[in-house]
Image (tube, rainbow, N blue to C red; front, side, top):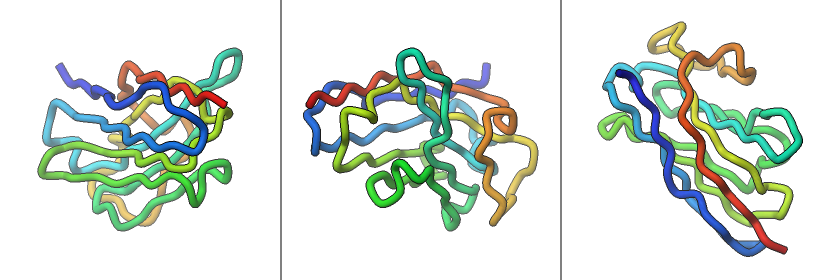
Length: 129
């Protein structure tokens, strides 16, 4: 069964850093756009960052631009989210997702939930003030 498994969440003080990882169970995911979303308590899930299959194109939500970095290692079929200068408002469950509609697509990045077909179970990130 195809799976995405997130790891790396935890409790951190404001200003600190965390690196999330998302490991896929099948090499087919290395061909596709991947993304990170998050959902804070009482709020809808929101887009955080996305990366195309090559790793050469990325896009971020305004709220994390300049603080978060998305990357991928296709040999390990793993996507990462490096989060620096964390703020209490970054507290949420973070999900990785795969858009498997178009293999090897570059330059067009998926920013909405409906574009993503596979989702991980999520990892909790809590930032204390």
